[in-house]
Length: 390
Image 1 (cartoon, rainbow, N blue to C red):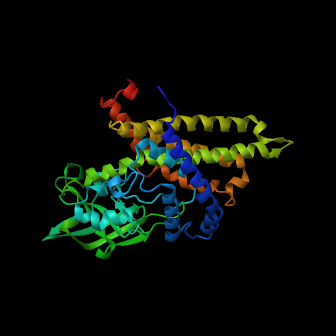
Image 2: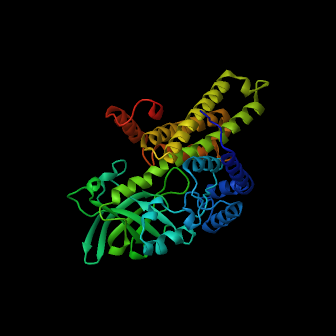
Image 3: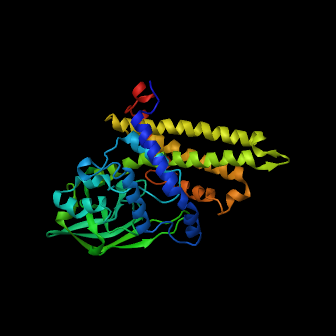
């Protein structure tokens, strides 16, 4: 059993680390200043400029198939890259990406939605969550009623990432109430903002914010159905599934960065004539954080590995998401404690991470939903204790 990275994995990871260090981290002070002034950390043009710089480094479309100009990287490599991006709080992401389910589009839809999104000309958002359908995504109510060659959408989606900026939304709507979403009663639609939906900003404890999307008699051509009629819930779960290993991968990078901050502070901050790192209370917090960080790393890499092996990743991904999200919350909390009053101020980014990572235990499947999936798989015999090594 070999836990080492391959030469290629190490080279790609190190190149991303160099890019983040040289191009992204120098922006942190300005991003903090803007956010304290209630401004976006990066505007759209600045993000685009950074993405084009990354393209010169060779990074464009990490998961995008090569036929669309992407890198088509395996899941483990993507996990390693997301970890490197997590080292900085600057809201950067590589360009050349599109929602994974957009590749189910027809050739006409690809020209209108997929390719412009990959090229950065359009911004998408994925809309399945509703005021009464969060963890229970099958309980969606937003209705799509057919009227000739069009569908009329009425209802609301909420907590939609990118919903304030998106040019179009991938909307999962109920098309057959009698069947229910899980049994083929929901369909995905590609809906331009110009068709009439509007977004409303939702203020959260973190930076930026999601949106509510309001659909009031929005008419969508039949040709804008993504995939097949009745496939909406399946596509929605495919979209959500990808976040189960990318989100905790990002958490690993955050935990690594803040833990190093804690170590540096513990070695230089003195109280009562000695560095605080000589205190057992501080040492225990650092030791626990490193142990949990390593445990999370291997759970998350294993979940990405199952994707690359063509195995069903749901059980492993749920464990990685559950433990990784909890780990980063505990580590950031300890690091803030180690920094004392300064950690609580907005002069340092620790309190920003504190607010940011709290979301990781909620979105793309709450802790409680991950526990439900893990326990259900075991109780019903879908998997064995020990997974693929059992």
